Length: 205
Ligand SMILES: N[C@@H](CCC(=O)N[C@@H](CS)C(=O)NCC(=O)O)C(=O)O
Image (tube, rainbow, N blue to C red):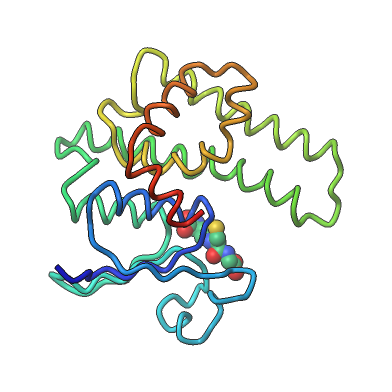
């Protein structure tokens, strides 16, 4: 079957998130790997698809209507609905997954990104500020660790909340391990054991 989804992506956690979802759901796609440092995402032909000039983005022509979706978390939700996988149908289970997706997308991801930006691009890379930002990431991970006490996944069965967090965890596993976050590291080992998750990180490393 010809792939009908075009994926525009690069090897960042936001980009990897879409690849994890596509690989786990077994959906066929055409991979367009971008080099962000070279500015592929700002070329006019891509800006015509995604005027924001960022990755990831999918274009799905397989219907019922052609659609372009940007924003990695929205892409995960779209693909879960398309495939009927990793998102429960019952309203309570479904809302629990969306709640955890939002939690991770806003509370955790914002701190992860702020810490990275402080280290890489802030005009004043003060070590006190960087340590403070890392502490906040640690606190966010510690809450996820508490959430996972006595349960295997964030919202009951494995869901898009788990798939979407995996690339961020992959960047932060050292912090979780150093701080003895046993529930979170056990969750990480469960995700590492999934061939599609590992494959996704290799596809866009
Ligand atoms: N909230 C967006 C973030 C998208 C985003 O910032 N993508 C970055 C890579 S992680 C990008 O394309 N950066 C290139 C640029 O800003 O030129 C998402 O989750 O998809």
